[in-house]
Image (cartoon, rainbow, N blue to C red):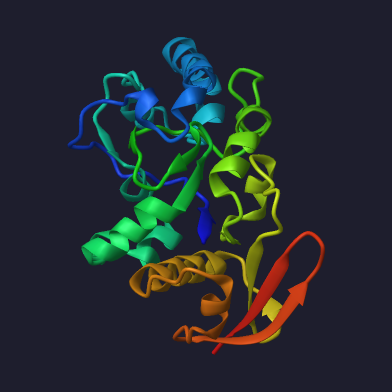
Length: 245
């Protein structure tokens, strides 16, 4: 089973690994397509006004910009699943997982970076900042990655089942060829949004801890604090509905 996961606006700074090598990321044959995006980003960061950087980064205080001005090719790297720092990643708590569970995530999870596109959870990336939905000087990275990486993703996934834990925005990067399984979380009958991030992290953590390898195994797994109440299947996807208890 392949798991698709969203990034986070927050990032952990620094890193202890050597600087980025684009050819080391998943889909090395598409290295030129990533490089073109990063070159645009680097040129914009290096030459833009504070107003333009504010829009690019999604930050208001210019004193925060300096952190993201280090050229990507010389900044230290960190495993992608550790780089991101948000609600879902807090509940995933990757550092506390045993080695075999970390390996499960590194092997089976694809993250969708607003800047780097689809990357493996174990790929190594530098610190960066690109607000969700921001263009890079008029260039739309999500459209670029959808056009150039969808076929490679379909081939990599093959006939494996797909658990899509991304937020809806990331459909702009990739819509799986095979109908995925998605999750919906209800609290008192209403769909939750912010806390859905937490439960996506919890589900991914449990999947890694128990080496869940199929949708069938996922559906029979007892997640603490969740009760499965429905499974809605259409031509486009299968949606498992959980009640938060």
